[in-house]
Length: 88
Image 1 (cartoon, rainbow, N blue to C red):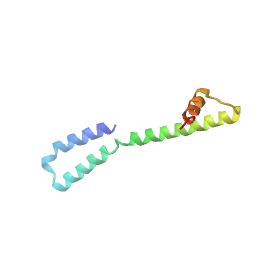
Image 2: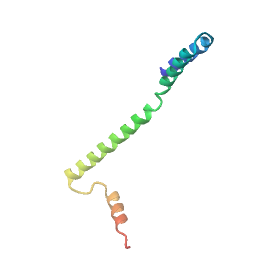
Image 3: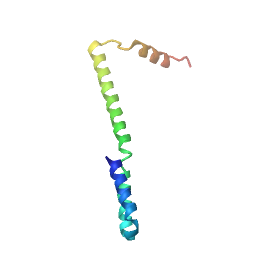
Image 4: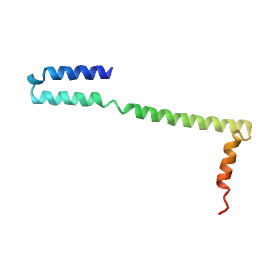
């Protein structure tokens, strides 16, 4: 939708470029800047989604450990113990 609006604004700007003053040209440039400013929204949304997924996953894993009171993922537990079991 924004691409269509941007294309339409660019077409209109090109058609009336010779008939507008410097102030109006500045307004059109600001409009282009505002329409182009929506690009980074996807990065923020994706980051928030990843953060929420990590928190929910940690809560679920913690709940499973509390519920069963035993090791849920033995391979991960073994690797962590090997990691901290170093002999200086």
